[in-house]
Image (cartoon, rainbow, N blue to C red; front, top):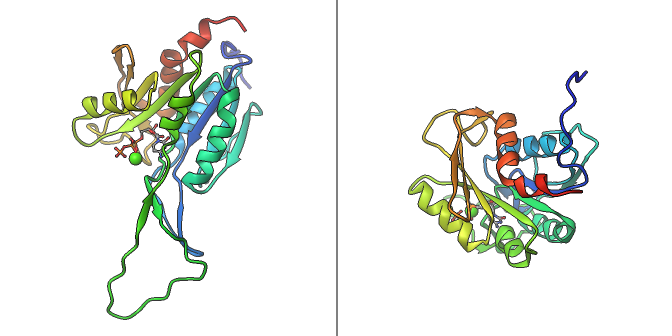
Length: 229
Ligand code: CTP
Ligand code: CA
């Protein structure tokens, strides 16, 4: 039971969220993936829905489940499928939050039969680049739409995050700091800094992903919160 009704400050807002990893098929039984858990994106989806938003959650393979009826989940496997689903949903969206760990490359060809081992030989896979969902949405963005990306860097965190935000025409980028252990992929906590395209920055301490989701919404969706429905 919720005794304290949360304010529905995102009522009627349509929020698109990408979450989780993508799997890129090598053959019918193998794929290239990554360690993203999807927790941050799912926490964002729940938080937006709890505040009244109509959420479209485009999620790569994960065991996480959603509980709020305000969340429409679209399950995808590969970066290509996520790209299709995201481009399709974006024109309707007031904001898009791109938290997915999208594979940058996929095998050039997915074998239709299981690839057999050959004794003693090396194995080479040729990879081909996937389309950039964030950059494509950045190109198509209407002035009133808010676009939020994520960055996880191991060197020159701030500089790289800023460059990504500009290159993809994002309004905000959320930097996941790896400097403190217990933050990031697979963990339940995150330490984030949010940069805006007007060069504002706001840093937060180590928090649960549920708490971090509220901070991200408060900072990045301010323009939507202020608007009348
Ligand atoms: N992103 C995306 N589609 C891709 C790759 C990335 O939408 N094909 C989004 C991510 O969801 C994230 C942002 O772009 O919001 C930054 O992702 P990241 O992997 O850090 O950036 P890249 O541009 O792929 O650069 P690199 O991996 O080389 O650091
Ligand atoms: Ca990448």
